[in-house]
Length: 412
Image (cartoon, rainbow, N blue to C red; front, side, top):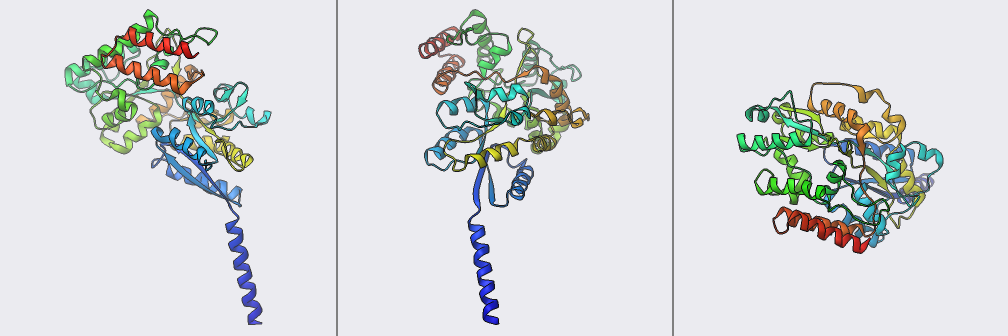
């Protein structure tokens, strides 16, 4: 009897071990969410495993600067994650490099999302990803620095021109930087469009961003850089450096997605308490705010594409998008139902609540201005290198833009 009982126990243990061994191992990658949003990501893991008992899910957070290279390496090695969080500009390049699988969404699944965000991840009629979160830029500003510079904290800048004037006044009066414009990489392409200036002609086959107006706009930032009104590492470290400077109390204004105000709260409570939030200054000529969209893609070479797509849809469904927004307190869903929740109308005196309310008023002007063109990786590098040359004084603004347009048109 004892022998039979022992045999039964061993058999049960072996079966249990086999069942565990048979679990499908999945990973999903996100961009720079740790450690602030660990609890929410772990909740998603637990919920997906509960709904899919044969799956063991792992969350991996990757720095934005490493994501493209890490993903390409995983695809080349035949070990990609099941779902990967990418920005819209990353997606364009990786789709062109053949690193992303096409999704097969039903009409009902497509209707869960607003048309504009879904279209951002649709190329040549093929849906290559599902949209996740976005949030229009706002301006977080330090009220104490404003007072020291003789600026009125109750009257923040409302236009790009007055923002630049305020930034110069802050530097002149306090010695601290007023702002750190988001002009590194290819961000000047978005600034041109926000100013109502075209990038390509109507056919989409010719670059046209070397007009006198384009040159004037680039020259504005070259002059600020030359005269010491912009930090030296603006072109090298961009937004990361801006957030660090602001959190240290050494930057008057931070142009940011409102979700990153949480980082200020986390890094320096005293600076957070001095922070107020204003709308991103609109350039009337453009009347649009570039709002980068995040989404989930299924990389090329996944073993179970249907399961990977199921994971991407789970991560971006109504319930989970709303929950993510409640945790970040400042991001907005790309799904229709979640966006109508009363949470987005709630007020509050702190900077995070202000950021959410301000950004919610800007959504009508929000648009992802990422453009699709051939050889995006190569052309973007040409753009970046030449703009950096102009900022460093190695080329005139006109020569830099002329050189970029010439190279682009040879490729387009």
